[in-house]
Length: 287
Image: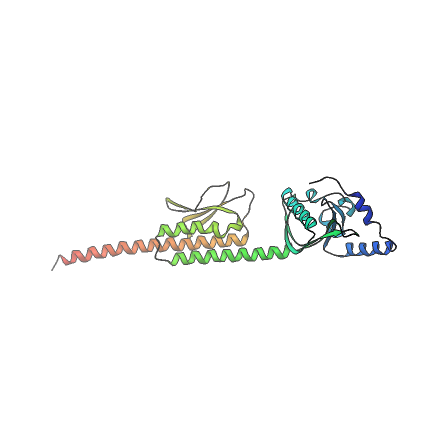
């Protein structure tokens, strides 16, 4: 990426011809009235103009503070690199990108989403000399969509586990192993790395199991008695489980208890069947 800032282009933007005062007033009104983020960049993707809305997002005192800066000054290097290559391609081919969703990752680790439009900015002769862009913050809408999809995955996970619990084609151990692997697969949005289900002196691990420093325990209880535990290992040390996801994991722990209780009931029934069979055999010995 070139470091030179196009100060000549900035000067040309301020020269508006005969109706310079009117044009400047018009541009200023548009820039500072729109709630959308509006900006113009030079050929090296450095900011020439930004509106008040974007000034607030960048946490600057005035739009002039952005002049000469680039996305590398505000976003993570990864995100800034993506936008830089994207904008260079737009200027090279002369074709813009309209109303596409862009994920922004900031230096402080936060994430936002915008609907962006970027088009080539041309001079009087039609030569591409920069980028004109407008973006609208859609973080709330996008997060609502993500949350909806996550809730759907959690529901699918619980339904799948319920179906496994009813199946008679798989052994008890097979049921527990399958459930352990389903949880990180369906709840990957919660950054669950691995799962281990402990029942008595046996443990059942998810596929590609590995322990992490961040572990959450969900007791599997039959009333006040603890019959097992669902151990959830999270990828990130500082990651917390959302309330809705935690509720689902507690429901899964309840369903595990039902499976365990069913297993014990079946074992007791088989035990009594053998006792009754032995009793009947002994009764046959006496006429």
